[in-house]
Picture (tube, rainbow, N blue to C red):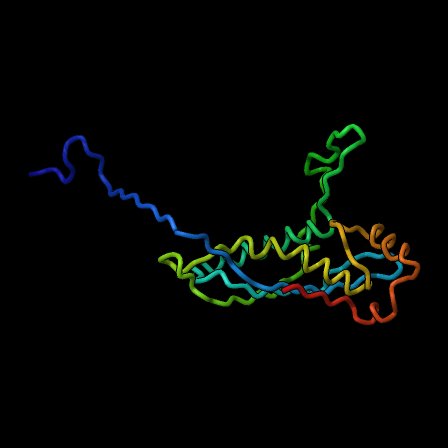
Length: 189
């Protein structure tokens, strides 16, 4: 009988193909954060976080959820924790995870995520990137919420409770009563 594979050929199927789109596809979305700031300690607590995003057709919902959640966690780190510290000679002081401050899972808020689906016309699957949709707006949404809570402009991140206190104190008044009553709802779209 004839062998199923010709002599010298390996069994199995193989095919390679490449797709080169004319332009890149980009996800879109909006993030909103609500923060509470303790007026005695200036600790910042993210009490609610919501994301509405559109990454086109969702091929694997669990992976997209993880991409958005992980991106928001990175945004929390950028807003409140992650900072490169150098000494006066330019030597990095926090090069290891032992020294580099990142948020614990308990410091990342529950995230309400809503998926909108607008298929991309630029590729056969109608997909867009999902990872950037969580990362890029996160820090700005948290900064906006802090600005709303204290009535002062945030110009650098991350912002610590001490830096927030100094920002408000240097503006000649404490956190305004109106800002304190608003409970810090900041929205970035």
